Image (tube, rainbow, N blue to C red):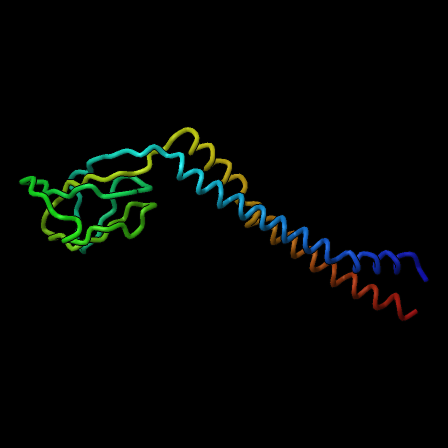
Length: 165
C-alpha cells in the first residue's frame, strides 16, 4: 500500500482531537470576550449628571451619556416641578445607549438626573483588547473551520480512490 494511504488513515483517526481543539479554542475566545466586556463595564467610574432639556417626544429619548445605571430624578426644565419616575414609568430601554421610555407629557422639556458609568483608562484598555480579539472569532475561526472541513472531505475522496488500486 502507498505511504499516503497510511498518512490519510492516521489523520482521520486523529480528527476527534482536532475538532475538540477547535471547539476549545472557540469557547476560550468566547469566554475571554465576554469576560473582557463585563470587566470593561465593572471598571467604569460611577458618575451622576443632570441632562438638561431632554425632549421625550413620542415617549422616548436618548440621554447624552452611555452605560446608564439609575435615574435619580426628573424635573420640568421650565418651572423645576419634579416628576415621579415610578408614576411616569421612566425606565431604560437600552442602558448601553441610555435610551429611556416614559409616559411623561411630551410637550415639556425635562432635566433628568441619572447615574452612568464614565470611561476610565482601564476600561479603554479592556475595550481595545476586546476589539483586537473579536476579529479572531468573527473572521479567522470560520475560515479555519471551513478549511478543515474541506481538508477532511478531500482526504476522504483521495482515500477512497487510493483504496481502489
